[in-house]
Image (cartoon, rainbow, N blue to C red):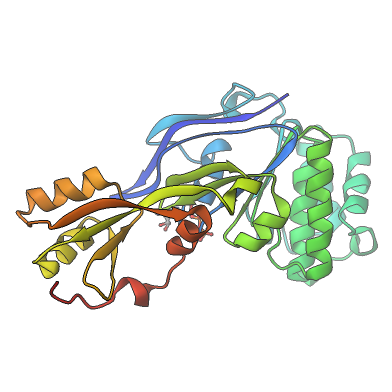
Length: 306
Ligand SMILES: Nc1ncnc2c1ncn2[C@@H]1O[C@H](COP(=O)(O)OP(=O)(O)OP(=O)(O)O)[C@@H](O)[C@H]1O
C-alpha cells in the first residue's frame, strides 16, 4: 500500500513561506482532506509531492520514493491540479488518448474513465465547448486514467453543480474503499467535512491540525495567544511587522491568532514592550479554522490604548 509521507517540508518564494516545516502522512484506505483558506499552501504542497517544484528543505515521498524516480508515474499517482489545462481544440476523448499513449496506458482505459466520470456522451466534443464542470470531470478522468494507487485532486468540486458534488463524494468514497490513498484539497470546511475521513488543516503554510474528521468539530487546540500591554500601538506594529494578526477585544486585551506564546513573548521583549498578560488560549479546531478565514477588516481593527 502506498502512502504519501511529508517530512519537514518547507517551500519559500522569496521571503514568503508557502509551506512551513510541514510534516504529515497521507494514508491508504481513506479520504484525507487538505483544508485551508486561500494561500494556505495546499497547491504548493501537492506540487512538491508531484516533483513539479523543488522544496527549499524537507522531503515528500510517495510509497517511500520521490515522485520523479517512479517508473510510469501515472500508474502510481493520478493528480488533478488545474482542470482548465486541457487542450481546447482536441476532443475530450483525444485529450485522454494522448495522455494514455504518452504514459503507456492501454487505450481501453480511456473509455472506462469517460464512463466513470459521466463524460461518454460528450467525449467526441471539443474540450473548448465544455462547461467548467465538464472540464473538471475531464481533469478527474485524467487523474484516474492510470488506475493509480494514489489520487490527488486539488479543489475537485470546482465548477461542479450539486449533482456533480454528490457524484464526486461517491467517487472519493469508492476510491478509498478500494484501498487507494486519496488526497483532496479544499478551502470549504463543510464540503471537506462531507468528503473526508481525515483532515490535515493548513494555515499560512503551517500545520494547524492532523485529525480524524470526527474529532475536528470537538477537538481543542491552543492556537491563540492572549496578551495585554500598556503600549498597544507598539505591540500591534511589532506583531504586524512579523506577520501576526491580532484582534483587540472590548476589555482591551489582544488575541494573536496562529501564534505561540514563546514567539510573542520574545518579539515583545526584543522590542522593549512591557506585557501585563501573556497566555495561550484554547479554541475548538473549527473555531481556529474560522479564525484563519477571518476577513481583512477584522484583522485591521484599530488599536486602542489598554
Ligand atoms: N510560483 C509562486 N511564486 C511565488 N509565490 C507563490 C508561488 N506559488 C504559490 N505562491 C504563494 O504561496 C502561497 C501558498 O499558495 P498555494 O497556491 O499553495 O495556496 P493554496 O492553499 O493552494 O491556496 P489557493 O486555494 O488560493 O490556491 C501563496 O501566498 C501564494 O501566493
